Image (cartoon, rainbow, N blue to C red):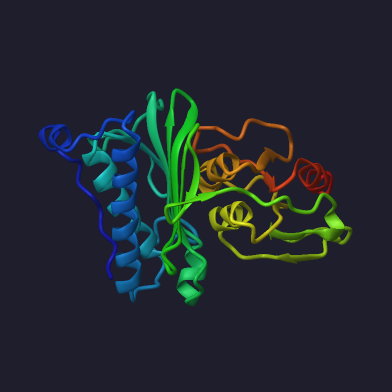
Length: 274
């Protein structure tokens, strides 16, 4: 499938299709329709060439980003995307992030997708006045759909989601990692799965006990924000390994997210990054 670009959506079209950011059900419906389209595009894709626009960006990343932008801009939202930066509802590049913005990773786990591995996702998070309010992470191969609404909890495929009381020590934990771990890292087991959003939602669903990023600040907010919101609404915990705010809307900023099902394990995981 060749890469494509989305032309700016007209003001009339934007107004006609506008979605109220305070209407959680309408936003969830919008996000769900976007994920249905991105999953279909991925299923139909047979072009795994690089786009040539940015190192390690696949042509399909651009295609899936275009799907997200068309729908979100058409609904009246500004967007912060891994693939296209900060854009307004008319498609124009913005220097400042407005009060309501959707942070999106159109295709988290692109290399997994290219390899045919079922661990890749579209992740969307509506941020209003600097705080996540509604999120969705959808596994594009399996269809598993995680959602969160602030104050209303998290769900997996429409069912309430609560973290189980997991281990409190590193030695008991099964942990998903990003980047190479130090030799001193000794959990019960660990996995490097290659899709941060799904790694974190797996903690919410009771799969992994925690996640830790050992990269030197290579993770963008689009990689983790929707999933962290799901995890926190499900009762889990998350921090940046260096104590910085995780909610950051500057596309040049990077973080080192650490997550866990228990506060004790979270502390143990943070200690491994120092």
